[in-house]
Each structure stands twice: as structure tokens, then as C-alpha cells.
Image (cartoon, rainbow, N blue to C red; front, top):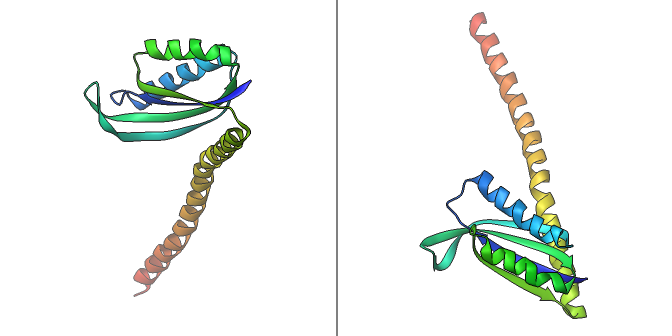
Length: 148
């Protein structure tokens, strides 16, 4: 089993649900050929360096996985016939130095995926704290108005 990384660029004309379905299909191609996905990194919609099929933008998604080298040709064949993809690139991590870099990239992507979930919790707590003083101030203002 070797370590690989795939960067895929999905057409920007799709809705969010269609993009996610396309990404799930790409991940299914990898897992159906015996691959084990370590993590993924959704980079989001970005401007392309040059237009591809008259598209100025594309949805970038990186998939880190391990798989037998013999399965890569089938994965790339399936990517080539997938009309949802504008471009894709497969990167093999072979030497010890490259494998260490791959492990660091996987850890970084996992932290990035965990960070938005923590931010949502923090913003909800902040919103609750922010609403509480506002509510008490409104009550105090209402209490003062009838007394005058």
C-alpha cells in the first residue's frame, strides 16, 4: 500500500448538493478499488489560472488515501471519463521523506476539518452570552418606562 493524494476540480455550475454527490462518487471510486481514505480537504470554490471548458472557477477538493499501486490506473481511467471533473492530478508519496510530508498534510487537513466544528460551538456560546445582556437591558428599560 502506498500513499497518494488526488486534487480534483469539479465544475462550478453545479449546486452544492451536486458537488457533494460528485465528491462522494469520486471517493467511492477510490474505496471500490481497495483504497482507504485517510482524510479529505475541501478547498472550496476558487478562480482558475486559465479558463477550462469556458469555466473561470472550479470547486477544489483534495483526497489523501492509501492504495495498491496497481489500482491507480483504474482510478485515473474512471476520473478521465467522469464529465463532472474539469481536471485532476494524482500525486504519489514514495520515499520516507515524502511519506513524512504526506502524514503532516493529513494531520493538517484533519485539524482544518475539526476547526470549523469548534468555531460553530464557540459562536453559538458567544451568541447566547451576547443575547443574555441585551435581554436584561430591554427588561430594565421596559420597567423604567411604566414607572415614569
